[in-house]
Amino acid sequence: MLCRARATAVTAGAHRCGYPLVKVRSVLSGPHVILTLKIAVIAVTGLFLASLLALACGRYRLHGRINIVFFVLTLSALVALEGLSRAVDPNLFAYFDGSTREALRCHLLFAVPAAALLPFMILTGGKHRRRLHLCLAAGFGVLWIGTFITGVFYLPHTSP
Image 1: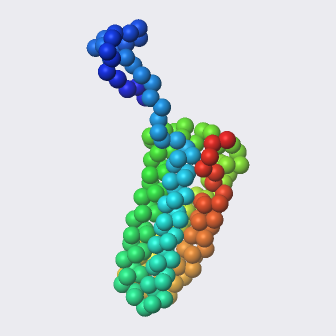
Image 2: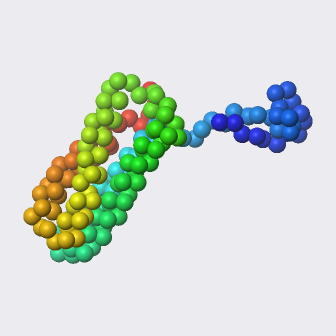
Image 3: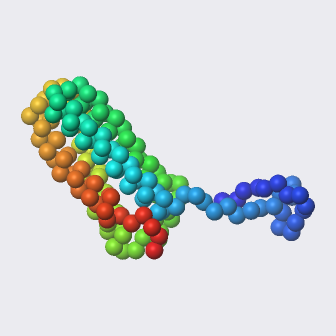
């Protein structure tokens, strides 16, 4: 990415307007994205636990509202990760070796189905379809535990 910086004197390689072309190092890097995603997973897990606490206290409406926020944040993180890794910078995770790619693939095998279950859980909870909601919740719980473990403990947030 090139940035134009104001020049006090015209130098060799300068743009015709007198601004030198300066190479700017991107702040966005794979380790930064992974660290941000780890923080996001920990934060939404706190929301998930708060939702379960609201459920245990019998505050079903609060449980549902927290889950809607949880859903929006989780889906936003997945869309942002896909957008960054495919559209913004396809080489964002080029530093991954084979085992790290496998760890990310394993993490996404838990995270994507968990995110796919969330709209159905919100709908069944809102429609008071208790039995179906509880079955989906059991599956989601297993998937979210896998998402948390693989996302927080197995993905490296440092470059090799």
